[in-house]
Image 1 (tube, one colour):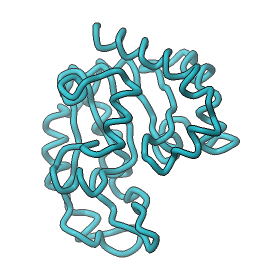
Image 2 (cartoon, helix red, strand yellow; image 1 turned 180 degrees about the horizontal axis):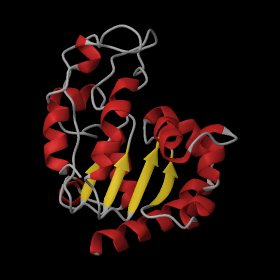
Image 3 (cartoon, rainbow, N blue to C red; image 1 turned 45 degrees about the vertical axis):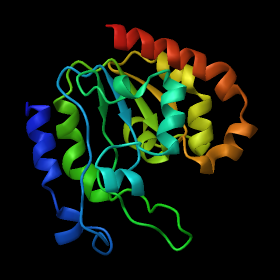
Length: 205
């Protein structure tokens, strides 16, 4: 079983989506793969792909989405970026570029196919995976009826499934989902208190 640090080092040197793309045109900018974790991590944030600020800084969630996500989890920055306890494994490790409307393109498919299984094999102590957005949910849970909303609505059922690590689906914390959050008040009223309690339990362990 490859060590997480070794896999992460090879991932950070990867240029597959620029030099030998398998799906569509090459990555439009210099790749900067971003991943966080260690073999001792107990919580994993399975996210979508780095944004423009993360691409510039080399650190995930260094934007308003990260502020909101840390609020959801009840973690400060020091806890959130503690690689010994928290892994952050995006579906695509590089910023995928912007689409015609100024939004982020989908994560590059090459990345998950090449690296995801190996990364997770180096995280043996995980207790909980937070799957953020439809791409991560599709990878970890398979296609579910009702899209992202239907998947997140079934959070109790998914969390209670007899698997290890356990999985909890979340929407993306982007400002683009403000309308979704207003339409789905149960998310903040019912899911977030359980999420925070689970995070406290996992981090304390």
